[in-house]
Amino acid sequence: MKNLLLMAALPALLLCTRPAMAWDGFDADSAELVEIIPDALPTKGENVDVRDYSTDITTTCLVESVLRNSRTVEVVVITPDGGRRTLVMEGR
Image (cartoon, rainbow, N blue to C red):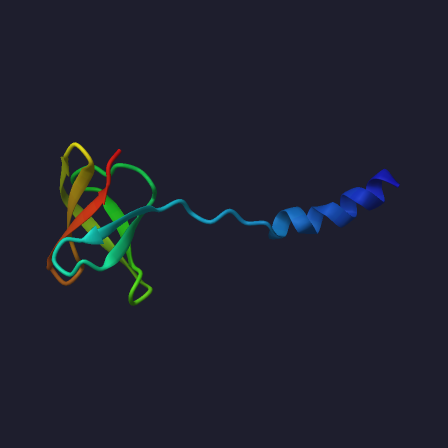
């Protein structure tokens, strides 16, 4: 009986996936909502995934600088095409 219960519960546990944690904010130029994955304060030179909510496209960007303010964190990233984006994220 114990093995039967275990065999029934195992597929349910394997199908339960936890979504990646993300850090919400917006693009300073366009005011579009974005998120940074992973949900951690990045450092200069680190790669982060930036997901645009409006287009549902995720782009891997290089962090150029991180500036902490009293309520927000400004993360300047360089996109793969060489453009710069300033992302204003919720404060940490």
